[in-house]
Image (cartoon, rainbow, N blue to C red):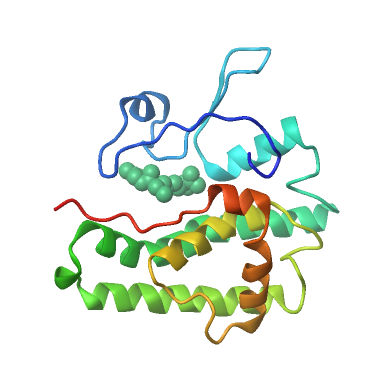
Length: 193
Ligand SMILES: N[C@@H](CCC(=O)N[C@@H](CS)C(=O)NCC(=O)O)C(=O)O
């Protein structure tokens, strides 16, 4: 939404507690849940991030999040799916471990397993990116899906740069985008003591 410069209202959920509206609106109980109240019909409620991206592109920026040919758009959809089903789960172990316990109690086996899975993702992404500035010909939903993962990786101390020069240069460029500056996480969520 920041990328498309759409006004939006964020409703935060408390870590570890399901917001009653999330339970009511989403049978999976996951976030994000997106509500577009500006539609002519009734409110549009969407609860999968890939479907949210496609809806935003359809309604607010035709071709801005999914630009290019059918082949390019299919690559963008594959990258969004990879971000959701492989990259997110790879990082989850270390993020959940670090935010749920004080540092002295961290289980380094969990963190190291997650770090290894994340580095495998970085190696795969490095190959797909090659020497391009974006994963496909232009900035797209692929960047929108992947960049928040990198923001989270960075604040939780996962590898972001080492050994992956193409990804390092892509990320340092992407970090300058207004939408990234406005939405990226700036601090690690501390466990409750
Ligand atoms: N495929 C879903 C994944 C969403 C997801 O895993 N959300 C996590 C937070 S990042 C969540 O809601 N976890 C809490 C839960 O599932 O109870 C999407 O893309 O929206």
